Length: 386
Image (cartoon, rainbow, N blue to C red; front, top):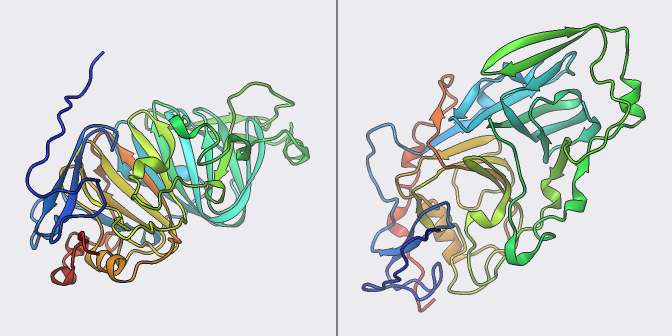
């Protein structure tokens, strides 16, 4: 058994409660371990921790506009990698047509987040309709295909050599955030049975060890007549997530964890009331999450802590430096705070550093690293007297 060293210390000016009632003239920065679960200290700075004016070197915040990738294809394996490491692979796949083949991921479980579109998914376990905002969890080595009713854009998140599990909810209980009863699973229904044919030739594109294999059958392999057990394809829509909230304290991103895999977690930010306590921070706090890379995929709404970020964009903040709200967003939150957020975003925190793939020209906003410069001189930090 082992524990982190515990010795709470107070030096100089500091607030009694993190993220609330900051000392006059200061900006708070959290330095934490283990993705907000480990030991942490809070620094109180005279200037914003993101107040750099120049940046040289490759370790910098990145912003990718996936709407400029222009990836089309009949199969999700046509989508190029965006961010990856030994635990995780991320792709964005656009398709306007139904699949005439099956795919199977032999490298790990897959989560499909439906950014746009709707249709029908058929897999070994049966039939599952889907729409925008659905997470679809597909166990490793499951054969599947989709029939497109409206053109789809899908964020694919592979848990390489691992699987997805529910997060431990501790004191708030198993029905908090979302009740497991809202999960919908693939069914052996009339639509599934109707798509079976013993006479048609079918191919399965198996991705394994980062290579493609084509397996041909003289019949449709999705020919199950029934099954039993507790492993299956299922979906969760962000609209069924009821986030944890505190009106007096800005909760860390870890409070919004949706899925856990080896080496990373997936969190979901959904609309919620904004903190109403006068002394509480109302946007994400500046922080060093120094064990994790942080990725955000923006799905819809007004992204209240970011400027010039649109739906379909991805931001990547590598571990090792401070980041937090953009100056305009921070100033607005202090002068004229909103009553609620309307953003929906998928966050991925990875324990090990992510690599970024080669991107087509124009897909990355290379000036994103300087987006914290705007109006930084006009910000007035939250103080005890506000």
